[in-house]
Image (cartoon, rainbow, N blue to C red):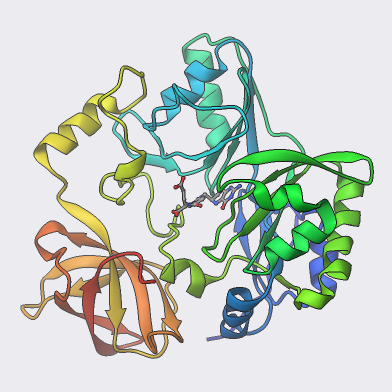
Length: 369
Ligand code: THG
């Protein structure tokens, strides 16, 4: 496969860390919320092993924030998500499907409750700010909605705890998963959450002050030498093995959260008001007709740039592969697929055509590991 460079323009924003990661050997970018998101630093497999054993610093500034504040901010945030936020607490993060009136997914952000009337929606790749503004205008809500200058740095991997303790002290290791607090560095306060788009543990630093953020970036590498720190990015192999879903890849506006296995974040039995609630109740009553499942394919290589049909032995389509990668752990290709309900059975066999060759595969549960 030939590789092409990506054309830079104002539309495809760079991040405060772009010049750093380009010196550190970034080899591929993708776009995320109209911003550069590093996708590789050399071999995906080498980075995968390194992430599972050490610590990496990621430029995930593309995970933009939509700030919603004001008297009706809670009403608006709740209107957008099927997760009940009525008991949410300041200082906590919440993984929340955002859906429309037809229960189609708009995004799957992490929502941070900064104050009783101030929220950050840390978005996946879709223009939530336009959806939020439309709803606020239509409902005449008293809110302020804007994209603040926040550029997240993720520190991920098993040695992230030691590295962050070295810089911020013991208090940071006592933070609970999906909690956040404020930590000082060079006189500036930084919101730091225990979260991140890997299952290897770690933190996310919501950098608001670019100057101290860049100094912190350099400090992480200087202090991290003894922990074998490297620059990295969300790793396709690790995230598929861990079943961290990717909006736009694994699911989009044509899917509802129950089809995507997000049941844990769907609350239909409380009084809160959100778009798509009646539709979701209906879906739950009737039962879903398809579901995201794992698949393991007897192949050594794959590059998914559009959905690929999964076929049964009578040549009928039973589902579609939406993400896939070669896993060094399974020594096969693994992936995330939307399967018609009758075929959502562990060990269900299928065939798939990759680069004009046919391969055999089997359905499995998510996550893989
Ligand atoms: N961090 C921040 N913003 C983000 C992401 C992130 N925005 C975009 C994207 N990632 C949103 N998607 C996800 C998907 C999964 C998780 C976080 C963001 C995640 N899920 C945990 C899991 O699946 O085990 C647990 C969630 C929970 O139980 O509450 O972490 O990574 N800032």
